[in-house]
Image 1 (tube, rainbow, N blue to C red):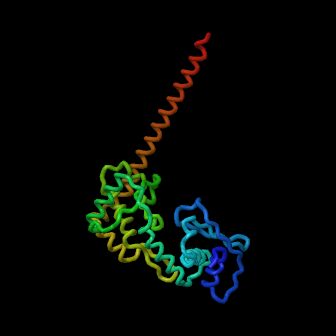
Image 2 (cartoon, rainbow, N blue to C red):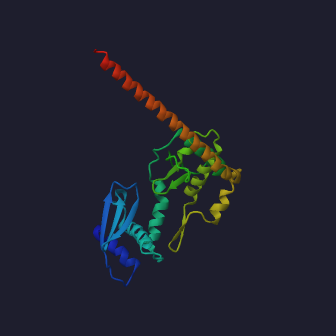
Image 3 (tube, one colour):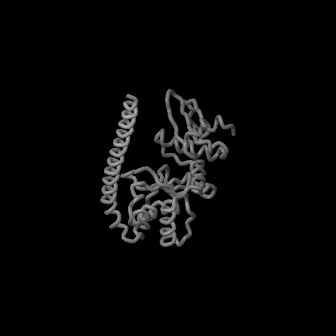
Length: 249
């Protein structure tokens, strides 16, 4: 199967009996994160922009990815064998992805959570601090096997908050996801029951808003202090330069 007609084949397979009324285009690029992809439709051109990591992957799995994107774009609920192949591929990606990103603070949290709640059986993923996000506290990316924790918790002394978020994301890594028709479920009933296993989880969940508000305020005043110090330093430089100029007279 030629790569230049994978998209058209994916469309015809998802919508049998129809005609492909689009021009299909596939662009592999290094500007998208590993195994990422998206589709656009403009002027009758359906363009798939895909991470270069997809290029050597089998056409059947790529067709599944494209059908997944088409289904969302065209609001279709049709299941597909190729979509199943794609989802199974994503679920097993963690086995081949290098684990070369970590941080001592996050690594310690993962080890505590893994030993206590997963019997030490979960393979350590990549562990990174994210942006200073105050609404999304953590995430797990199946495509690069990475747990990201908001930097808002980086200076919080009590480790239970980071551990609570780490537990949620490691649970995603362990539980994966499942499909029902065209819907993908990450927080099914069993996931929500397992979340309750974390000690004092309900209380911690309620405290998170207060912790975030406090850390946000601390960051604000810290930034204000840094800006003031920088302005004073710049003023001293200007004054020193001014004195240097008038020192010639």
